[in-house]
Image 1 (cartoon, rainbow, N blue to C red):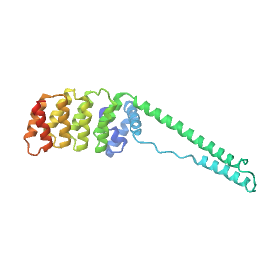
Image 2 (tube, rainbow, N blue to C red):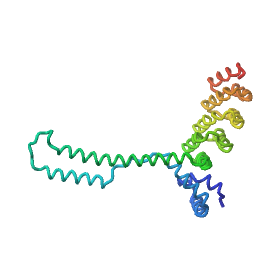
Image 3 (cartoon, rainbow, N blue to C red):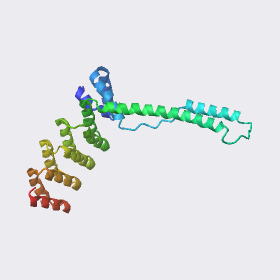
Length: 259
């Protein structure tokens, strides 16, 4: 049986139909009896929903039919040709006024809809941090690399993330199989480099990471804070044959200046 914590961790995959049939049935059954998880499910579904843009809506069929009916009636009344001076005839003005009225009605309706959508987005952004954290952590565990990147970038919603989020980001940086996810995690963690957990994560990553782009990002971040504990793993990188020459040049500069 899944407890509430496991359920909440899997809500994103559940919403996107990326759980097994057995898990789907169990989660669905749990949501029927647990008000707390059901509330999180509803809010999470809304949070994920605002990430995708709304389709542009066209005027309703009734609006189009009304306009065509008015236009038809005007044409019927205009079958008798009158040779009136062009600027004294009011037919053109009647057409223009009718169309302008219909267009303004549609645009006003569209404006109100956009306003409501923007207000809802604003409300969702102010939701309690625990739900945002649940969304972020769930996304970072998603099987899709693009979703994991999205989860990592969700860190922007937190001005002061708790240790659970920092730990999850460090995990992505160290162990994610996708290079882009690891690099995105490095960039996200740079904002919290003063944290000891982040420093230790960067140093550990420097000892295991093989991608040059990630290596150089980590080195620059550690140099920026003059982290002495980074000297030893940098020296090891310098001694390895597979280390890229530009990485070695960067390390030599750092070691010469002794950070």
